[in-house]
Image 1: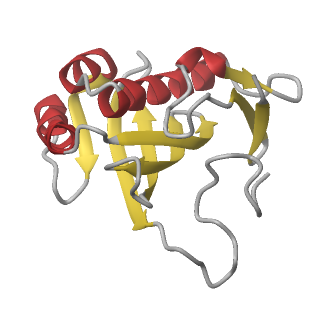
Image 2: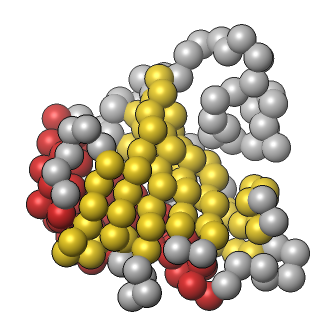
Length: 176
């Protein structure tokens, strides 16, 4: 499989590209570059954020994902969700039930300390242009997500800068 690198400030993460651009790569495809600058905790947290997203938003096993990866006292900074595992299950569960083809492709992973940032593309249908998603997760010492922020932006046909909002493949113009 093709590998692509993503710069993470001082840290680098390398993930294998998946066969289908709308998929999230399995959590075991996270590698480090440049001497393994990520700590074990950062690697674990990055894998957990990827696994949470994959299980809940691609495999649509929202309740299982919440039990497995979220702290019971999970805090969310989203205007439409309630705190706790139940709030997560209500919001994400409603999205995937209403949109059976819902997918969340992860293009970039940033890990630093207790925080992981995912930069991805959400599609309600395979034909949809989609929504760029930035998810920020804070982890506790046990590796559970204790806090989450997100920011969403619709994908437009053309940006004023000419640069893509998200890279689904490394061969797209403006992507590396």
